Image (tube, rainbow, N blue to C red; front, side):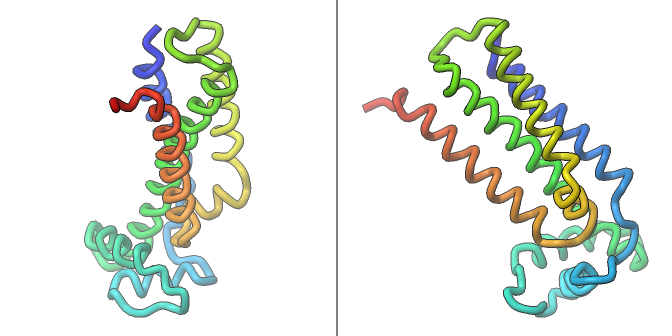
Length: 171
């Protein structure tokens, strides 16, 4: 069984499922808290309240350009959170599968039974996290938490990937 291929494929599949769920539940306009401020400061590249979230605002400006008309700017920036959250789920799936390999002490060849355990744990973990209340609400509105979670999940996955490949480095 080609674990790497299936891991990559299943990670993107669950990320696509997350994107679809969040896409159909995304906030079409601005919510009544900081979201409206983040949308307006992103669209005009203005200064928001501290700490400001400059990366969010710069990427929000890119997403606001994708809006076909001014009335869709809030929706476009909310879609940035949808995209960030779906990618968070992808990297979380890959992280859990790397942790599963480490827990099962799998070195090279992976049996179908071990793959089923690893992928089952990764699916259960990511689906549970995908539908938690706070993550879902942050996934469908313009808040910095979706992008912050994406950055953390990428860094965690990179650390696990580095650690798993550490022994294979050529000296």
